Length: 174
Image (tube, rainbow, N blue to C red; front, side, top):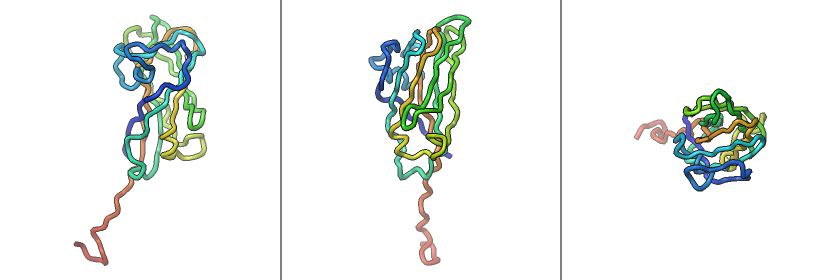
């Protein structure tokens, strides 16, 4: 199996409560894991943010099957001794698969949380390349403890297409 990452490339629907720091756009804060250099901050419970993702870096013809997709996030609580929760879910192509990420109350340390590897895009149907081209993630801040997110990528695990062996022709090797 092989893997590649899908990185944010556009801000979707966003509450004004998610504030970009260190970059102009929120998606730019989430496309590399650089801690306090750039991040998206939110203190308000139930505030939401939708992030859209770039098209896959692997060509469709090079993928035989998409085995799983999961998110990788990095964030931290802004309070000492109090965890900060963010609900991260697939918004498109099919809404669902929500997971609560509870970022540890270490004021200066960012924590990486990996989502569950999803083998289907909707609980029934296998992932398709078209699904990858339309991926959106939704973050919802829960509770009131502030959070900083500095990374939100999608890891795609796939089986590569096997090239045809044209070396044997009519039973002879050339």
